[in-house]
Every structure is written in C-alpha cells, then in structure tokens.
Image 1 (spheres, rainbow, N blue to C red):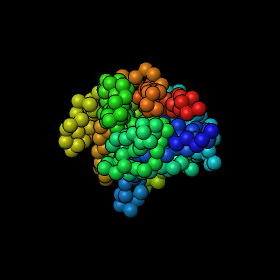
Image 2: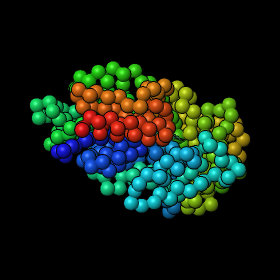
Image 3: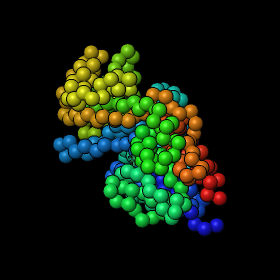
Length: 324
Ligand SMILES: Cc1cc2nc3c(=O)[nH]c(=O)nc-3n(C[C@H](O)[C@H](O)[C@H](O)COP(=O)(O)OP(=O)(O)OC[C@H]3O[C@@H](n4cnc5c(N)ncnc54)[C@H](O)[C@@H]3O)c2cc1C
C-alpha cells in the first residue's frame, strides 16, 4: 500500500492519542496546533512569584482512577509519573485524584513523543489539491505544500466549522448546532494555606471547585496555591465581563464561604471561552467519507478526558477503514 498522509488539527489529548494510534499502524501523521505547546485543555500555567516557579492546572486538575489507568496503559517509550493526589479517604471513583507534580500538561507532552507537530500553527482553512484527491492546510495566510489524504479536526466544534467552511462538507451544519460553555478560572496564591481538603466542591455556590495545587507534590514555598473554577453556567453568564470584576466576585464568594484570611500574594484570571459544550453530539465522530474529512474531540461524547480518548479510538478505526 502507498504511504498515506493524515493531517490532524489540534494537539489536545484526542488529537495526540489519534496520532499515536495512526503512527503505530504505519500511517504518516502531522499534527497542527495553534498554541505554543501541546495538551489543549489539559493545561498548566506557570507563574514566577518572588523567585519561585508555581504551577497551576487551570484546565483539567487531575484524572480519575479509571482515566489514569487508561492513559498509563498506552504504549509509549517512557512511563508516565501519575501519582494519587487526594488522600485515600477522600477518593471516590468520580473525583479527579491522580495528578502530575510537573503539571497536568505533562500528559500531552508525554503523548507527543515521536510525533510530527507544527505548533503556533492556527489552521484557518483547507484547500483541495491534486485535482480534489487530497487536501492542503492553510495556516493564517500561508498554504502549506504537503498533500494529505485525510484531514481530521479535533478542535472544539465551532472552530472545526470555521476550518472546514470552504470544503462544503455537510458536517458544518451539525458543528454549528453545538453550543459552547466557558469557564472562569482564578489562579490564586495566599500567604498561608487554608485548612481545606485538597479538592473542595462548595455547595450552593458560584464556585465549582477549589483545587489546592500545593498538595500535588510541588514546590510552593509556604504559600497556599490554588486554582478556583467557577461553575460553567455562571461563567457563561459572565463571559464578557471585565476579568477584574469577575475576580472580585469570586473573592467575595470565597469570603462568604468563610475561607479565612486571604493575604493575596498573586492572582490571575483565565477565561476559557470554550471549556466544553452544553450538550454533546451523541456520536463518537463526524465523518464525510466522500471528501475524506472527519471531526473528533471530547464534545462528540461528553466534556471529559474519557470522551476525548473514546472519540480518538473511533476516529482511528474510521481512518484505517477509509485509507485501506
Ligand atoms: C476548566 C476545565 C476543567 C476541566 N476538568 C476536567 C476534569 O476534571 N476531568 C476531565 O476528564 N476533563 C476535564 N476537563 C475537560 C478536558 O480537559 C477535555 O475533555 C479534554 O482535554 C479534551 O481534549 P480534546 O483533545 O478533545 O480537546 P482540546 O484539549 O480542547 O484540544 C483541542 C486543540 O485544538 C487546538 N486548536 C483549536 N483551534 C485550532 C485551530 N484553528 N488550529 C489549530 N489548532 C487549534 C487547541 O489549541 C487545542 O490544543 C476540563 C476542562 C476545563 C477547561
């Protein structure tokens, strides 16, 4: 069989896992991501505070046991150092209690080993090549010369619709029905840690989770290092507000919840314009066999890492069938 070339747009967990499986099957793959690093929403932000490097997992804070087992079982040249982060008494099947001391984005970096990845490469369009038999990737206003037999997007759905707009694929209609949900995350450092559980989910609050980053085996001086995530519905209603105002609202909510003295050393807001979808698609992938285009990603099945990996599995099977 002649060598087939597949372009994967998006180097989050679904894109990376899909690339890993295709590469193992002997298919040549190239990943494109708009960011300067891999891992997508399994993200880690570093901050230099008074000479200390602090890490905040401001996207996915950790993995459930099931997710950690699945990821650790993937065949890679090196092992992944996922460690339980919550004390055994606090562990339930649904809590994300496995983490990486070096930052959760280490999962994406681990999966990216040996892959061909173009970073800082926002894909803006696809163009037909070789008389409509293959595709070329347009990144901003530059058309890349490589021809691809199949293009698979793993970006959020509305970004995928935008990338595919010149292809006339009927998938665009379905992509445009998906409603995104945002999330405000506050990265906060307090002079002293609060006396709270490593992962706190307050009841009847605009705050969904308080994640104690300093409990993840990281250097944190003697400070309390936190990521505080607001509920998606609340975040969505406040998406266009000034970050300073949103920060004030979250801090006053912490005060109302009785979080004690703040003595803030550092704070920074992050707005996830796209954290997930209000309603998943309900199918593992979208496929246009005729045009050799496919869309995958967590949003097909849910809003979590498990859904991202399942969608990648389905995309892999469909790609192998399509290319054979
Ligand atoms: C605040 C927050 C908390 C979360 N908590 C949890 C949790 O506790 N448990 C859990 O299981 N999941 C959680 N998730 C969800 C989890 O992070 C996602 O389900 C998973 O990371 C999705 O992976 P993906 O590869 O499908 O998408 P993404 O990670 O979004 O990857 C898509 C990639 O596409 C890239 N991209 C987008 N547009 C373009 C373009 N035009 N050109 C090139 N590249 C592009 C992006 O840069 C990104 O890297 C959380 C997410 C957020 C935001």
